[in-house]
Image 1 (cartoon, helix red, strand yellow):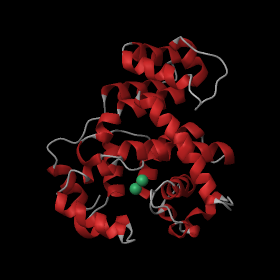
Image 2: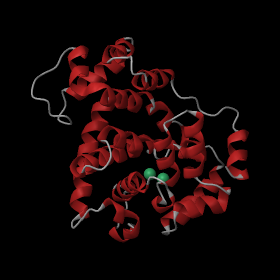
Image 3: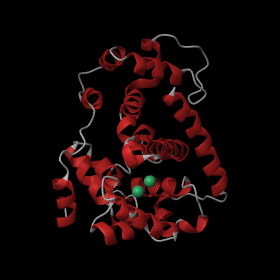
Image 4: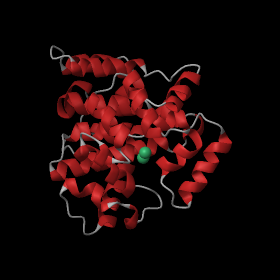
Length: 267
Ligand SMILES: [Fe+2]
Ligand SMILES: [Fe+2]
């Protein structure tokens, strides 16, 4: 960790805490002796979460044929990892939407959906893991967005003019959201793979897990509001071994799927 990253994290009165329910869900999934029932128990304690899970399992996003009315049945269909992902996506919404974060939650869900979609179709990485990589990739922005407005605006201006966000943040903060995100991931005790992806999602070739980082890099570029094909550095995504002839069509599919999930999770 460089000095500036250390300073920014130390200067915070308190580093944002991971919501309790997320810690519980992560621990349940990690523990080989636990079962889907344990996840069911934490969901049943939270009425609004129960409703959202039922919403999703009945939505076009998963396309299960029958109408599902019980949480037990919903979880059996979703399985441990997808259920955990839904719990995390819902529970972290307040943190991802507070203050200056504005569209961070929608961007996290959209990137998650894109990573899941591509990984499913191309057999890159595990699709539930891919969802989590996409969802968490920009957690460092939670802390970057706590910095002074004036500096944040300057970074935004540079990015609008086509500058690389990492270079712009480095210039104004001496560190960047990828670096800070990786530190936050360590504090939250997220899996090592996830921490790596967070750290290198703008620079996949520097990572020891270039395929996963390239996946997140690609999706993050595709889902940008001002998407341009030339903004994708082909050398970064070579390791994915995919041929994207019509990136705008892939982009459309991702955005459409994400819209469904965002609306189901927001109800
Ligand atoms: Fe990023
Ligand atoms: Fe991003």
